[in-house]
Length: 112
Image (cartoon, rainbow, N blue to C red; front, top):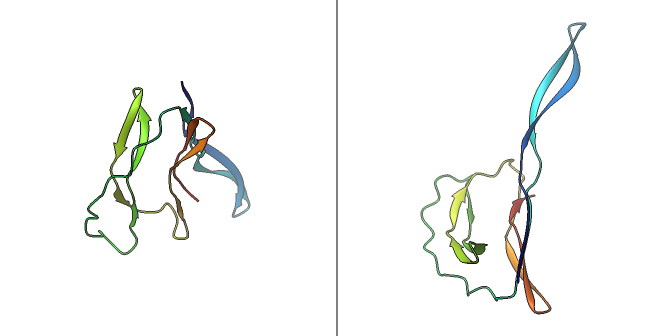
């Protein structure tokens, strides 16, 4: 049994009314909706693979460890990598598998 539900992130332009020097106008910004993805499988995920952490590109980069994901009806390893957080106070919430009865549910990682 495999059940997959995915909602992708779509950047959306948002027009906000503003007043500049007495003239009405709009400022357009782009906002992204968080990714929501649920995968449930009956096969337990493999053990995490050992990884070599490469040199940190800058003091702002955060290491995102590798993890197993489910693709094409099998587990696939997603290698760890360095990434710049979207904001200076962002915290990475790691992707994870949780056992629920005889199944395993996957929760995507995301910046919080």
